Image 1 (cartoon, rainbow, N blue to C red):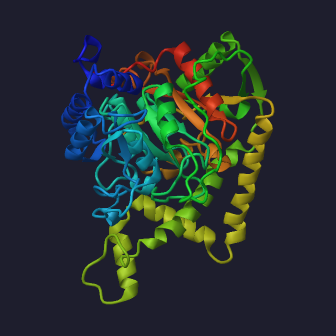
Image 2 (tube, one colour):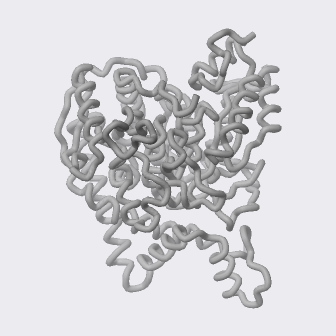
Length: 497
């Protein structure tokens, strides 16, 4: 029987929804129906979902209500990014080259979520092969920011972020190679978590840059994100990079006070190039942490400025190698009417890949080519080590690092497409966490001042602060993020009614 506080399940947090279903105050079938109705109503204008598995979701919801699905997420609807393989539906990576691909197996992260009782509503739109920061590079059309459809939702996991922001699901899953969870989370006003590299199995995640990619959750609040992380984390023998380490209970200590927590602020994160709202958000967060009993520590990350060039050498080189498999021979798009093998390769790839993917393949191939490998790729790996050393030294002085997630709020569609470098620079505060393999989280930190900015028509746009922690210390990261969230009191704000 539905009580007053569950009259509209789509307005509940993930934990509240789970608890209502467990207490029989709400059925999983009713919750799933409400989310499917909301997707039908809002997705045509937002384009967060590429595929919706309505019949399968309803069937699993009935199983949950019959007691056939058990676990900490029993009956909870979620969405997953379209680069996670499932043995149902298609896995397209929002690319023409995979527009009809059906995977023969299911990604470990998705399987674990379903084993925990989650109900997958559908797959979300993304920048093609996760290459982008705006979800404009999608063969199935761009995703729009639920706060204002004239603005981008960020990327590459823009569909997953927008789906949560628009209350089309209480939580979703994305992937983060250089900020692709944290950046859209900030731009859409939700929580986005990139765990430590190796914390969640990458088996079944379609590779962009294998040494950087990591799966993680989006949610309305930090506790919800922690619960999704809990369900996915842990060693997987199917992934050789999966860490064979115990997984703590992330929700057990998440609400403990942060007295004595050392919060580091790097001088490299303070810049005149940042939108004023970003500077104000970090200053406010610093003050909130100090008032809550944390110690604010100045730290130095001297190689921060080399993050973008290092990332775009390492990532594109790995992309060039990983995407070589899409050749028109084994699977994926195959050009018609060809007579020679070289023509089959070139036409299949030319027809199947979008401009941004082609750009990155060419950059990576050049960096790996004879005569340039040492000058570019090998040097980038050496700088990557220096960036990792910076963080190792910093975490001897502090427990978490505070800074902006992005240089500014969401930008308008088309504003940066003609200048890829400007687009890339928007990730300057996120890429280094991937290069170092450390965990990071973006938490909502307010809205831009609509009255005195170009975002006036939007009524203000979301911004986020980022927290980083030492490898496999997601527990401390989540606790700090949770305390900030409670003090800042922004995460309950919604983009759509």
